[in-house]
Amino acid sequence: MNWMDGWWAYAFIAIAGWLATDIWRWLGVLAGNRLRDDSEALNWVRAVATALVAAVIAKLILYPTGVLAQSPLWLRLGAVAVGAIAFFLARQKPAVGIATAVAALAVGLWWLGF
Amino acid sequence: MNSVDPIEDERSSLVWFLAGARGIFSLPAIILMLSFVGFCSLTVQAGIPPGQVVFMTGIVWALPAKVILVSSILSDASLATAFLAVTLSSVRLMPMVAALVPELRTPKTPTWLLLVLSHFIAITAWVFAMERVQDVPRQHRTTFFAGFGITLVAANMALVGIVYRLVADFPPVVAGCLFFLTPVYFLASIWNSARHPVVYAALALGLVAGPLCYWIAPEFDILLAGLGGGTIAWAGERLWRSKREKSA
Image 1: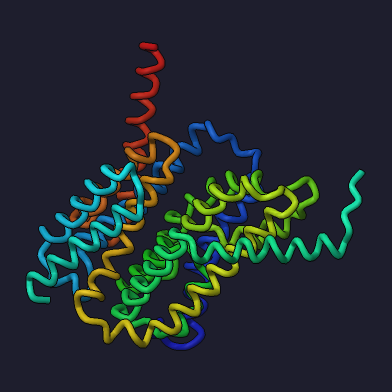
Image 2: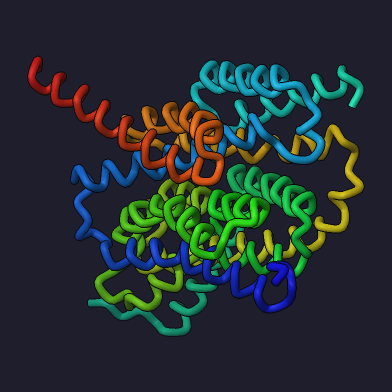
């Protein structure tokens, strides 16, 4: 069956999306202040979770879809690097880092004739 | 004596709900909305119909989880594989919620209300709430958070629904930049909201492990990179910490 057809797609999103995320939110509520913030188990969970999201970030930058798939890798990495420099120069303000990285990418894309 | 006039109290509840809703104009909310436009263009390129994208936005809400869900769909993953990948990516929600709940509740707050409100917690809402909730009187904090969370989710559902038809016609430079906004926003906000050294180590190792695992085992790359990179980061940071404690 094509997953995009009708109710199956919504069921897929509900199970793999909603249930898979809200379980952790509910457990978080139940754990509440009982969860020790300095426990080693929580530290490991935190590390695994962060590395997981970081892997997604790396994939989005290295193997993008759509327009960016045709852009050179050096441009994407360069834009991230320029953004990172601006981020640290601006005392770790997210908005500055994000705006600089996107602006660098925009200039690069425009210069390459996109 | 605690004689709060019920009418007065109700009126101030509305005021606090609206105060939370006004958070839609804050910088984190605006960046998030731009990221949602970018996410929308990702779903258009993935060929996911608009109804499902709006549904996904409201019901999953956390952007990293949705990006993983969409990539699972793109790679034709089974329901079990997609569930596992999204579940593992969302473990981070548990400590986030657990940290925020003691800030939000009063001794009288019912658990069901916290369970409902927890759905609106994702990176942006969490950062926003942890910052601003301190300035809200405790008995109005759940109302304030509800105002912000509900408004933010509703606005993004509407945004995704409206923008879906438009993103296909965007000039390539704009489409490219919007796509790029998501990974860059995650990088900056994870770094910025990290309150523990292990997060920096895990972020760096995950960035390296992601492509490496994609090269070795493309089917389970994200899971492998998370478990492998995260465990190495945790062990390394622990070793570093114990060495520092010994020398101190």
